[in-house]
Image 1 (tube, rainbow, N blue to C red):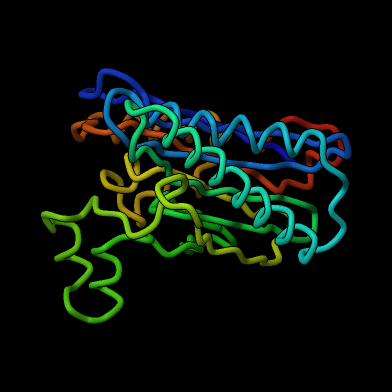
Image 2 (cartoon, rainbow, N blue to C red; image 1 turned 90 degrees about the horizontal axis):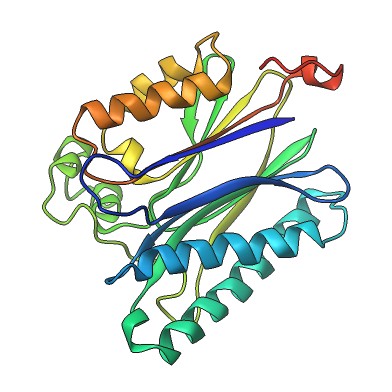
Length: 253
């Protein structure tokens, strides 16, 4: 199993409120996670870094997860604990009032992946040359699309496109969505913040994921395209490759 995380400040923002990483527990199991922070006076980067650091520590000190049910329980509990920490931290310091972060995380084993998310950072699965979005954005415009009030094309230009209905740390109780699906050798997982998906279409993402380039180079090309199209937001992505070659000690993906 191989994962690659990339993040970029973009062309407009003065600092990067995104955070993320690829982490392994003592049993060699992989956790991929991206957080896109929000809040004034750089509070967003505090929230996203808190989310990543707390989950990383919990993961690296955790036990082996042998089933999808165990993985779902673990990530759900981790999200609850991180939400409490961020929410409490925001209450204690006025400059952090209202801060929060999106989170999309995946526990990746040989047999299955367990994905949990809150907000509009996304997870895609690339399998058999097809890219499928696994998560549903917790956003106002996505709810309008789902209810049939606007089209997907309308959503792209909607003035309240960035309004989230859920985030981590903004309320005392956070409700994340968690699911597990099977995957096989050759599949690839893409986690990303909206700084990427607001600039690069799903069709273009599929083309990148189908590339024969290694995942680091593929990720760089995605970031470059988002920046070429304005780069108004921070851009973060993470690719995990389920490659049989890696089982044999090879490093290609």
